[in-house]
Amino acid sequence: MSEDPKRQKLGRGLSALIGEDRIPFGRAERTRAPLQVPVENLRPNPMQPRQYFDETALRELADSIREKGILQPILVRPIAELADHYQIIAGERRWRAAQLARLHEVPIFVKELGDTESLELALIENIQRSDLNPMEEARGYAHLIEQYDHSQEDVGRLVGKSRSHIANMLRLLALPEALQKMLEDGRLTAGHGRALITAADPEALAQQIVSGKLSVRDAEALSKGRKPGGAKKPAPSKDPNTKALEDQIANGLGLKVSITDHGGKGGVISVYYKTLEQLEDVYLRLLTTRDPNAASWE
Image 1: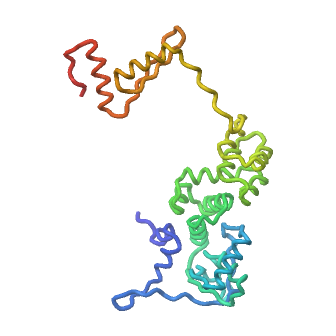
Image 2 (image 1 turned 135 degrees about the vertical axis):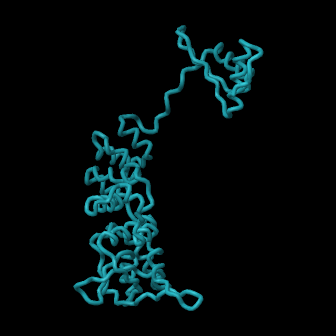
Image 3 (image 1 turned 30 degrees about the vertical axis):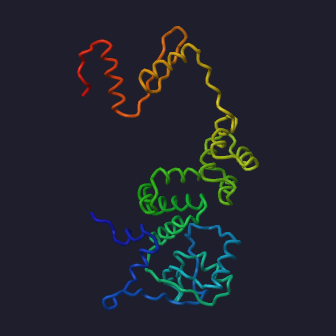
């Protein structure tokens, strides 16, 4: 059964959907011009996965809009009960910045999309632009799964992520609310969050991570009860006679050799090779110690 063409376009993002608006014009092709509508005729989408908008970044975008205008139209869908009013699918940040820039009109592309497609596209666009914090991303995935019967594999295909990435992001929803806030405001990364999921006291450890500016690896160590950043326990020094024997065999084979002695209870000789030719050479050397006429290894 073939895949829905509209869903294939959704998976490629906003540019693929806008591509539907290309109209033949002689031998060439022109793109349908966006509509200009009053800024107050747009409404944010309550299902929009992005909930946090950095004020500094919005002001910077508003300054750019004052100087150059809105370079990419806002993608919207009609609001059935309000004539000439539209719900934003992708571009709420541009719409907010346009208001800060005191624009009276904004450019839009209108698409007839259902609730599921609208949420999918909003999620895809934000993820492609890395605009979502980890909790917004996780909640967007959860909404698609819980409300629209998508599997983790379905969501992964839509947003171009692996199923394991989707599963790992969903795990963040099990964190205490205080930690979710830290992920939302950037004090913790998704990696920190995943490391704290199984910790005995995740909130205390989170405070320690933030105050100490600890890495994800340090967070993983803390959650397992180990000291973060501690040096690994040095390996016990090897007996000089064993080391000399290693060097002697290594020189004979032309390969790295390691000997592990189990204190009078035997031991292990390890020979490290990089190619099958090196392995065959070791094999032939072992054979010829017993049979000088041994055949080559096939």
